[in-house]
Length: 171
Image (cartoon, rainbow, N blue to C red; front, side):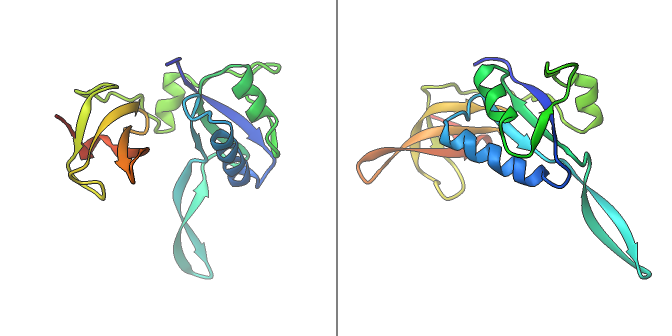
């Protein structure tokens, strides 16, 4: 798997969620899940006072921006850049610049330090959740989302199922 980084794209004001949804739809249609891992519109809780009433609301941390954890290549650049509502990547000229660890830390994005004792090809048993007591072979591991994709036999055919790291054990 190639290295992914967090990139920032600028959007038309108020288009952040629409851009996120459109990129996610394109990822699904073009099967880019292993190249664009996450599309994020970071929110923060803010206390607003209106007419003397305090109310907790969620506001966008960076209005006009969407964060993407992705592998930068011609395909992914093109897909993101040509999404309706995207005005461009953040960086000098047209060159996207990934966020640094310090910038990520200040936004509350942590590098994943997950240690797992299984790998692709391992047989695992699901120990909790809807698929409890199901066994399957790991086909994919996403450390960022902390999920594995296992192949499960359903109605006589192999079906991929996403399971959280905490819901499986190696057999």
